[in-house]
Image (cartoon, rainbow, N blue to C red; front, side, top):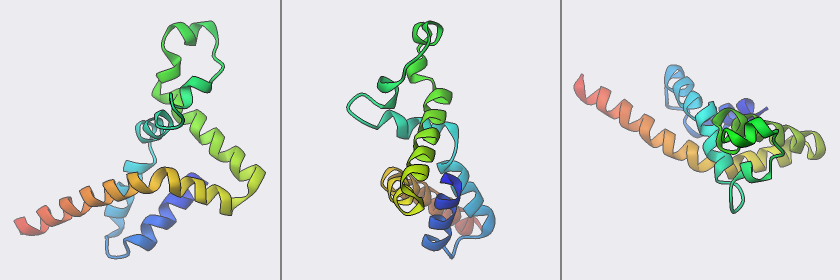
Length: 119
């Protein structure tokens, strides 16, 4: 669901970008590192502060592991979707990911501009 919302937003907001560039843009927004960064920005201490972890993960820094944070954020978004439906889940996704999409799109436009200026 996250991928569909992000892909739809990128397609509608950047119809002039070629398909390959849109795919790269989507990949820069929907990946483990980006999801973990968004999760770290939730709440006063990040999403990791709210996790119940086993002793092993607790002692090895599991609260800040990118894979755990990314999976937790995806699970949270899935729960929001199941409880409240696609419209509310889309709103939440946009609030969390629109800044990242804008930043990534700016970089993509810079890549496109540099490539065009070399030609």
